[in-house]
Image (cartoon, rainbow, N blue to C red; front, side, top):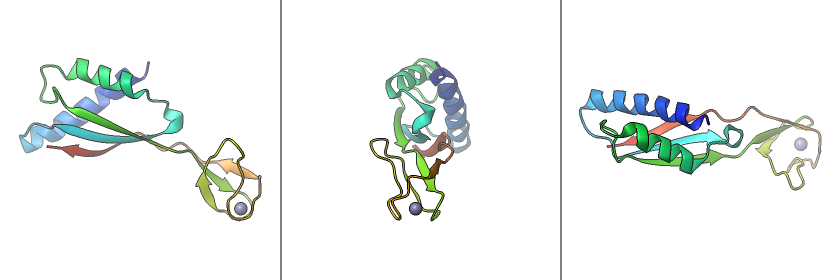
Length: 111
Ligand SMILES: [Zn+2]
């Protein structure tokens, strides 16, 4: 269950920022790649549990899952992976590579 680790990292990043601004954060937006396999519910639950009695208590987390990207080896086009019939949208080649998953990012904090 790596959600707990993610929640801990988020909490420290958000509360650092909140301490700097001396205001209470009310929400945060994060994004991560699909392969990161974050379970929204588990993450929100973990975050809520550790945020209790901190400046982040009651903060709403919004999680955006980014699609996996591929790069065509023929024409270099990058496109979102579609596992039902993956091929390059530009040249129809099926010769492509998967790009590394998008990292977990803290996109925005709402105060
Ligand atoms: Zn192509």
